[in-house]
Image 1 (tube, protein in one colour):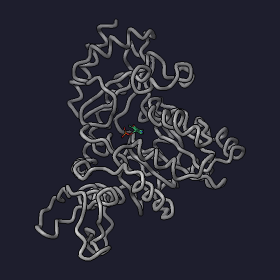
Image 2 (tube, helix red, strand yellow):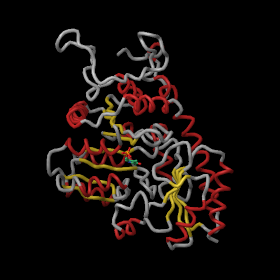
Image 3 (cartoon, rainbow, N blue to C red):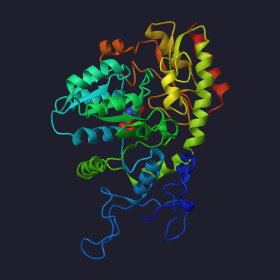
Image 4 (cartoon, rainbow, N blue to C red):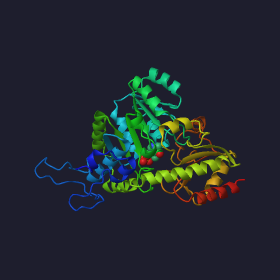
Length: 393
Ligand SMILES: *Cc1c(COP(=O)(O)O)cnc(C)c1O
């Protein structure tokens, strides 16, 4: 497929790429929006002779366009799009031979934890570690000799920040590959490959698509060998994304920049408001000066996105439950990164698959509430939260 080219090889800014990368007009009709190639198979002019597409599990032109766009955004040579973030994690686990030692952040997405802890723990040798503690990490990497370090920054739900540049440098020294799950930041605010990571993945379900109407995943790398392995696995196992879903993500991506700016603007205001609230014990938002990872975030990110975690002063779970049932504008639901604001209780909802004891050791307590700030009017959001606060006073 012919790529959409800039004038005289000019390098497009990310904002421009969200709209134009992978966005060349349709050759046959001139349609400026790519068609949804809703087809399972493609004609061959003679056996084995085709136009690069044979079967949609392997490749699909709509999905290819999305892969082209994402590659431009994450500054990657190779991109693979699948039907969910978890299927990306599953494919990555299959890339490595049995019993590979791996290190995973101890505060990763609940589903990632479940997949690694209850399915791949018999296949690989997986250990969990706080990736923000560089000293402990170095000791572990030196002794355990992992082949892969899997980290999220900011983490979920505690929004801990790992220094990507320092950590990937450290891992490289010991010949360990690094993968950054960049779901919480999106390429608009954080580009891990530029900071030394070998792989970057996203649950596209969140900010990348941004409209809470698609489940999808992507992985990007500059390493051809690993890309080819991943593609071979996707084609063999089959978690390919449908053309329609890829098309929706392409559509969602066009507004990534304006959405991310709006999420962040609202989140900053709400984080500051919560921080000064009498009923709040503490607030975690990487954009706040009080956040322990603020300095690193400021260095490696161009913004802080829309996720906020806060702790109620009243610690019993009944207060959290009341609070969550009294908000009306915030939608009580799992997931994040959509234009609408969501509220959830990690201990009961997203992180319920982590045993209570481990959860509490990690700091995911019963008074912890997570917000995904949408792009609504910020005063409406604050008013909604204030009503909930009043009910538990
Ligand atoms: C949602 C999420 C995933 C899993 O992605 P799905 O698209 O739900 O399969 C992985 N990592 C993070 C950080 C997530 O938020």
